[in-house]
Image (cartoon, rainbow, N blue to C red; front, top):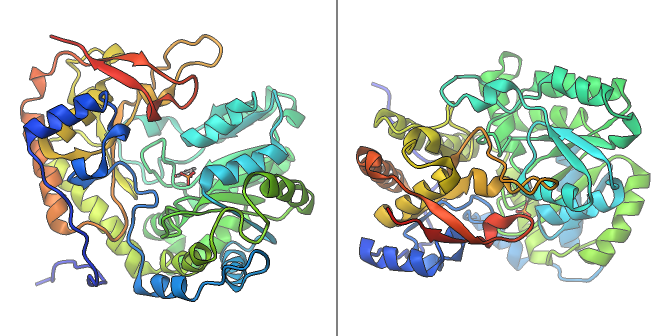
Length: 460
Ligand SMILES: *Cc1c(COP(=O)(O)O)cnc(C)c1O
């Protein structure tokens, strides 16, 4: 008999979380203007809003917090972090920032001009925001299979090389400063990109003299999928897979709140000295001196340790296994989820879940609100509200996928929590045809509206 899988860690410290009633949650979400970002955390039982900065640090990371050097310049904590980043990525230059979007802000200040075009598999929302804010344009070149949630494809985050080459051919090449490959591809459901694809994209970029950058927030999880799903890598260590992956690019930005296993932090690493020199001036203006960039010494120390822990195969197995378990349990109950299950989250397919709600009334948001009311579980809409309006026509952009993302924080919730989440969704799924009306927007920001949007329930 094969023994069941169990986590490669035990718990040294616990944090209480609050339960509540359906009646309380109905009132709270109304007060929150039907925006899940407006809830207080103690109004939430299981918080799957994001896996960003919400995970648990290890005893070794906490030890590093105590050892931290808070010197303004040249602290030993910075030097530890710099050593780790260079060792793992192989890039020559490292710039610390306070989080991932700050890394984008600093790098894009040095590299993106009005009218530029930045293709990629599918850009993360802050990445897109920082490019569009500079009046640049993003072009998604992800493979068509990515939008078919029923279809199994091992690497749904892959770039369609024909689409990418078309962008290269149909635009003046000097307007394309770089390509971004997001690993894993968040927007497409946390789907990985294969090494073969990364290599081919790299070759195409070189042929057209375009730089290649990684948005590497979940690169360790991507490397795990490469090891599991790409034959040639099955005997390689995660660290060596990561080294090969980074070798195909010119640099990376990263939110350390994901595979850095810390609560705050960001990374830029790159090879080009001229871009580095331009970027550090912006870093000093926006973030802080080049040896802390918005991070305290203790954050940098914890990150230096976290980066290595995230490359540990046993850790990655437990992380991905937990997410897969939740997804498979839901699929077993007939709940429509994006397949294959991604690395950090399970995505509910709201078009299939609540087709009875008109798409103009925000299906995915409606489903996310229902999940909160019924189970006290906070997920997030990855659909029409997130997709924002077209910058030119100001019309709503209706993406092909209307998803609710249930992101699982790292090393935080137990197996029983996964059972509870799956059972809650089973219950909602049973009564789904009763849902007829959704929500309307009362107020929205001109960019990245999902964080602050004000909604009203449409009465049946
Ligand atoms: C989280 C994330 C970012 C932005 O990072 P923050 O730390 O939240 O600012 C950018 N890209 C991807 C793929 C991410 O997951």
